Length: 82
Image (cartoon, rainbow, N blue to C red):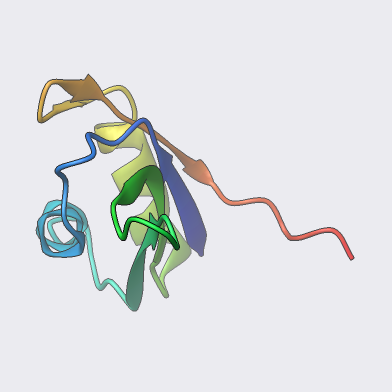
């Protein structure tokens, strides 16, 4: 299941996200979205977790959690519209 994580502090790294989510299960991929010009975080990321139960546990426990003085929002990522 693919999750969208929003409202991340600009200083949050992919490694920090991976550590945060691996507590709830296997993290298949972690993609922090970066600005093409500056290389800095845009404040959101996508995390893929192969087991839906693990992903749901991560959403339940991490949505609204204060990480690096930012209240993150975690939800299931919507499918891209063609």
